[in-house]
Structures are given as structure tokens and as C-alpha cells.
Length: 283
Length: 280
Image (tube, chains in turn red, green):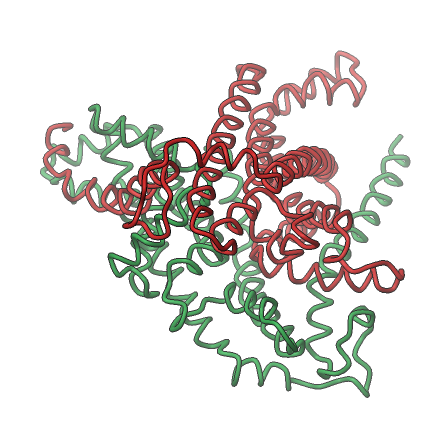
């Protein structure tokens, strides 16, 4: 059978692989090469070696946006997962209206980041102006926490769905056995439910960490990095470096930043997967 | 004990009702403001319900549709989403089948590259991808789906391949012994089995493509084509007087079809997301 299928590779494999080469492989390799060049367009390049990386790391805006992104990602991951897990545990207790709540909490995920950012900008500005505080784009602290609130509002529903699926997959016998052995609900949660939920926790941590690091649309729409780049996360910083800085050197530096960003995200994914996979319970 | 349980679940239901209302409120706020007159939409009155003085009827919606290019943006978004998701579903499932059934270094290399591509952030590719698309002429809503097929292939192939490993190979072997070629085996035997995964992948990719902002913004010919996220961003990004009324109306018109689709298919959507995540 394998041989018969193999002969048909131009039909099965080729279309996707061709598109993948255009949509990913070529731009990726070219991006790697361009990070070593000074360029304005893809055709006119001068090789400058690693100096772009030096300039990228020395750029204080880049450093600031990096640390801001780290803070943002850690806080939002923690909040999202704690709340989503709590909601999931409560919603699997056979309450009335569980389905309705689930539907409502998941809803924000379907609305795009740009639209979400815009809606929340109007909402936050109204609250702030009623409180007599400066508007969102004038104070970076509000911008930062606003973004966290927005992300929680959007992502809790998504993670909740994954946790609920995980909780429902735990065989009822385990929980019954624990109750018969005299375990309190609290012990059942820590000793039975959570260890069996490890695969879901892995996925959710992974998703919220990478979502936080890659966040772009919401950042652009909510504050646009204002005031003076102080609420700019790393993805937006790279975008600004590419398209809004004048001077022939900035595109190369932007590409170098993008490569560094890519390495960070890939590294996080690898470490994270390895760390939580080892804690999973074998069923 | 039983009585206590009842009280607890009563309190929980109340808490969740309040939370749900809070969750819906931002969307409700926009709807409210889209019905107000232009001059009554101000920063500090965004929470007020439209009164008889400030009520504008459907004026804002009319102006959004007539003058702000909403309809064409909606059409382009629809074209891009439908073509891209259809291509992804058909070609990525075929590709995933080949990869799981043919055991060679090519399949393995493809698989790991696809998985790798899921993690790479778009900023890494944005400049080179948009200039490549420009040179190849993939800059209209009718052929940008090729770019989406390439960039979205990672997740789709990964999910399809994960599911295919669990399909017993004997079914396909039986079909082949009965005289089906690989193409017929795939389309009349494997394709129907894949239906649940198709729904998951389709929903995830639709959510992504419909809401995607940066890729179409950089790749599409901006003078001719806008999609809905680009249109909304234009409203905000344009300097000078922003027409708040039509903008609110556009947001409502953007959200409305999504909510309708969601309410109709919420069971599938929620199940699809859960299934997708468990395999991912």
C-alpha cells in the first residue's frame, strides 16, 4: 500500500508543500539571511555580518519592550490559568445554566484582536475619564493593566473549554474511590484531579505563554504603544522598527530583532513542553 | 448536607450570572453607542443608554454601509476566509495522509518543519513574505489563499496527522485490495472518517483567517482591497476627526454575523476547540 501511495506524491504532497515553501520556508530563510544585511528592499542588500544584532540588543526601546513583554506574559498567564481553572472546576459541578455560561465566556475569542482592542479602548477611556484620570494612551500603567484585563477577558473562556474537556475525561471511578477512602474535596482536587489534568495544564500554559509573547493586534488597537512606546510589547516594537523608523539601517535591525524574538519564542516552547511533560501522569 | 449544597449552588449560579453579564457588557456597550447620534458619542458618556434626544435610529448603520466601504470589506473578508479554509482542509488532509502512511525521510522532514512553523512568530516572516507575495502577484483577495495555505499548513497538518494515526490502516488496505486507487481510497474512505477533525480544523482556521489583521494588511494591494479588521483599524488610525457613529456601527456589523454563526453552531465550535487543543 505504501508504494502505491508513494507514486501519487505530486497529488497528495505537492500542493501543500509548494504553498508551504512560498508561505514559510523561503521567507524564513530569506529573513535569516537579511538579518545579516543592511537593506531597504529584498533585492538591494549589503552584507554587514552580525552588527545588526549588536545594534538591536543595544536599542533601549527593544530592551524595554522585551522586559515589558516578559512581565506581561507572566502576569497574564498566571491570571488566565488560575481563573480559567477555577471557573472550569465550578462549572463541572452540574450547576443550572452551565451551558449558557460556557457559551458566554467563550464568546470573546471569536472577535478579532483589532476589534476587541478598540472596544476596550472606548470602555477604559470612559471609566478613566469618569474617574478623572488621564486617558489610556497618556499613561503607560493603565495601558499595561488594560491590556492584561483585555487578555483575561478574551482568553479565560478558551482555556476554560480546554480545562473542562480535561476534567470530563477523568474517569468518575477515581473521584469515587477517593471519596470512599475519605478524601476531602480539597484533597481530591490536589491529589486526584490536578495530577490527571496535567496534559490540559501543559496545553493551556503553552498556549497562554506563546499568545502573550506574540501578542500584536490587541496591543496595536488598544494603545498603539502610546505614550512614547511605553506600552509597546516586543512584537509591536519589531513592527514599528520595520515600518515607522526612517533611516536605511532600521530594516536590517528590525529583522535581527525578529530573529531574536523567534529564538526566544521557540526556546520558551521547548522548555515549557519539556518541563510539564515530565510531570504528566501516565494513565 | 443536601441543603448546604443547594445554597452553595444557588450562590454560584448568581455569581456566574453576574459574571456573564459583565462578559457581555463590552459588546452591549458598542451596540448602545451605535444607536446614538454622532455628537452624543463622547468619551465620558459611553455608558449611558441612548435617550430620546440622542437616539439616531439606524442612521449610523446606513452611513457605514453607504460611505465607509463596509460591504466591500465584508465581501473580501468572506472570500479570503472561505477560499483559504477550503484549500487548507482539502490539501492539508491529503498531505497529512501521505505523511502518516508513507514512512520516508521526506515525510518526517515535512512533518517536523510543519510543527516548527506553528511556533515561529509572524514578525519573523512579515517583511520577506510580503515582498515575496508582491513579486509573485499574490496580492488580491482571490489568490491570497495560497499564502494562507502555506502559513496555516502547520497547525492543520499537525492536527490531521495526529488523528490519522488512530485510524486503523486495515480499512484503507481493504479498500485498496477491492481495487480503489490511492485517490479514491482517500476521498471515499479516509475523507469521511476525518469529518470531526475537519470541523475542528475548519473552526480554528476560520477564527484565525477571519480576524487576521497584519498578514492581509501587508500582503494585499492596500489601495484596492480592505478586509474588516483593516477597515476598523483605519477608523482608529486615521488622524483628524474620527466618525464615531459609523465606526461603532461597523463594529456591530462585524460582530453580528460572528455571534449568529456562534449561536447556531456553538456546540460544534466549543467541541471543536476542545478536541483541537487536546490533540495539539
